[in-house]
Length: 125
Image (cartoon, rainbow, N blue to C red; front, side, top):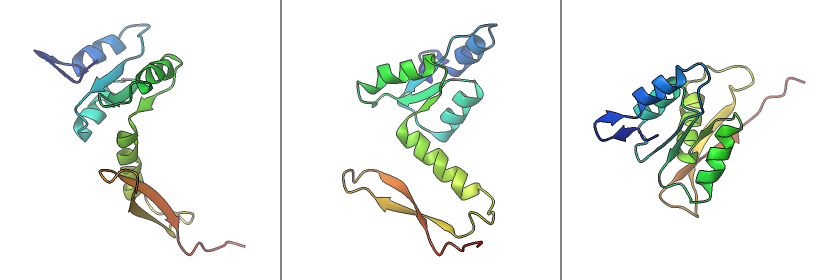
């Protein structure tokens, strides 16, 4: 299902499909990776969200993943959700000394990958 199609978006059909008594799994395949689309797709109960630039072997693997009952997000979407979760997560004694640092991946200058670096972990012992 695409997020944006001629005359209709893919979210309303996804909601209608998921309202059925035994709905199939829905995979969103789109070029639109805005947070508003991702969240709307997840709220509509889509099982997966892949970007159309996904490697050709990842699309069939993604379909298998959702048909087996699991969920799937594009790696860049997953990264952003993790970053958002960590940034907004309230500190706890276990996480108060963990800092998140973004580092450039030397293999792909266009992307930054998240790297968690543990700094000055205080032992409870």
